[in-house]
Amino acid sequence: MHVEPVRIGIIGGSGLYDMAELTDREERTIDTPFGPPSSPYVVATLRGRRVAFLARHGHGHRLLPSELNFRANIFGFKTLGVEWILSASAVGSLREDFRPQDLVIPSQFFDRTRGRISTFFGDGIVAHVGFAHPFCGKLSDVMTESAKQAGATVHRGGTYVCMEGPQFSTVAESNFYRASGFDIIGMTNLQEAKLAREAEICYTTLALVTDYDCWHPEHDSVTVEMIVANLLQNAKTAQQVIAHAVERLPIPRECECARALATAIITRPEAMPASTKEKLQPIIGKYIR
Image (cartoon, rainbow, N blue to C red; front, side, top):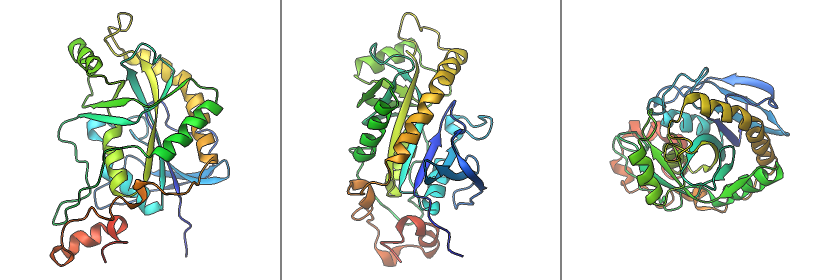
């Protein structure tokens, strides 16, 4: 039986564990060569489009940022047929003008994680994808316009510094990030973006500002209660923004995301282990048989 691909993926972060508008729901549990994703994918209809929703931290928020199986999460989307991922994530602000409950569509990353696996490759197959511009520009345009349509205060551009966590920053760290010119800080999105690029999936982030991190004199002690309160107030807006973005899809995939692997795989085909080729077929299949 032919199963129609689900071309739009949604990743819900802290505070966005479901979307009220999803209808015709079905849960799909996907086994991947990299282990289980964070939770079953909810395949459903949103604004007339079939989408796959994934709760990044699992049901009940059970997984630390460093415990997330990023490879399984993105691989699962790829096997479903996803071409665009709309990711929502809670962040702290490193700028006075990026206020709690504002939205940010970042344009860059800076990596402060340690030892997280962020590639599908290895085990005999090597690839080096371009990552100078880590977010899909066209999809970020869609997200920005959708945020405006929802009446949200949205900032386009800026650098997301991805820290290891789960602890929040020290004051010294927070001030260092500000002095370095970074704009927002979070714990999850960098590995998703890297793996989405390898999987040739367009990816963007809707960053939900929950606090000023600890640099701000009025936010020198960031608490979970503070963050959750702002997340709950942001959740309705975030759902509206994502729904508007889904309405604007599909769009032509004339971006670097769609052909990221075309010149990235460096291993000679005859040197590739058959088991690794088989494992990565959803990722490399259009280039390597």
